[in-house]
Length: 272
Image 1 (cartoon, one colour):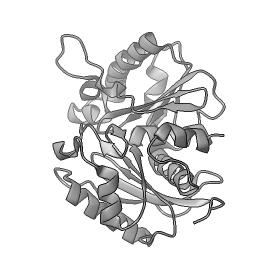
Image 2 (image 1 turned 90 degrees about the vertical axis):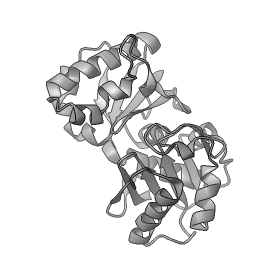
Image 3 (image 1 turned 30 degrees about the vertical axis):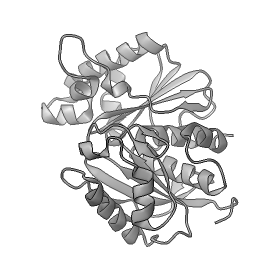
Image 4 (image 1 turned 135 degrees about the vertical axis):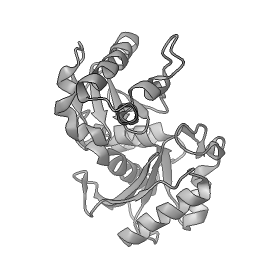
């Protein structure tokens, strides 16, 4: 594949589902139907790899002719996963990029799921051209975050794990979309939890923009207007496909010869 290629495959591994599609990187849009399979119970490495293979087989992109990016819900440094909030503890300290490359028989680019969603919004979406600090949050099984400053990513922020003093739970246990479903909250009830979370982020970091992604962002009109913030807050342009688009964008940058070990370098390349 040459540096002039304009298509890549993005696979987004989440706590409940694994999604993938072929992406047009000129426009940041999906060229295929989005394929989704359930994340295997327990989310052990071998089982997740098997599920990723099903996604690629369904997309008919099992060979190495098209660059492949994989997004994963963990801290990712130098190809290793260093956390495991919504997957098996086996992933902690695990050489995940090498594992997927060997299992799939091809080179890939591997990065944190919220970070790649941030790349999608930087390159094609709500963060494009925004100066200062943008905080993207993905509301799903957990809360993923990406810090975007003047068009560059500060990788591996984990602001979904801010602790709630005296409550014994972190932010995502209290305010993720899964918490809304678990506690059978209405949108107004859930918005009160989100108000605490975004107000806390606003106080700590003084951002210029919040972007909200994840599957629930398609219902943004039911909860974002209920929040009272000084910072503008908008839904992600790519909604729940941002991880797919961003992973594909980073895969193409890696295929063009950019160093794959550091996500920040890839982001700089893909957002120029």
